[in-house]
Length: 193
Image 1 (cartoon, rainbow, N blue to C red):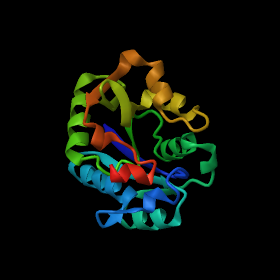
Image 2: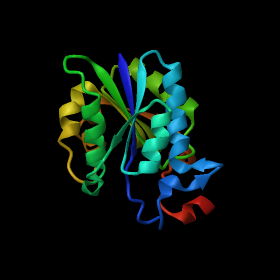
Image 3: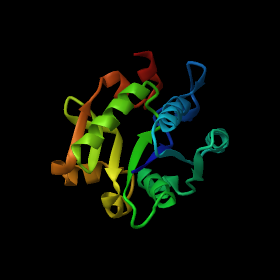
Image 4: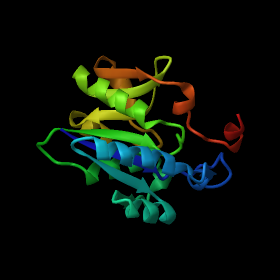
């Protein structure tokens, strides 16, 4: 079954003070750490691809060179839901089952091995939704079976798929991971801790 990995990279990062996604960490921009995890994982999986949704020309150009499907979000002021919808709509295949694995671009310490183990465990459960978690609290990345497409497309504002996760607790698989891998960077001070 096809796995569409979608990087949500259109946020404003207002608390960071500048474009956090382009902030250099370990010799590359913050978003690139997650994108590299996704690209490497896509090469290992049987039937997977990578989509990047962004509002930034620099990210668009760089990601395009990797072979990922790149999409501009011209309505990012509407919140993360607009990026979720753009990424989904570009990968819809009516009548075919698929999975949509959403990543945020501000988790630079996320490891490919963690995502691989999570995805492998999730696919064995038969559940329709899976999230990495910290102490039982759902975090990103999250994966959704295509049966949840309609609900994901109806999300409004600055809310991602967590609404759908909360609406279907019986169909959610959680995979525990360390806080450092799962933390999203919102402020420059977080990088110093």
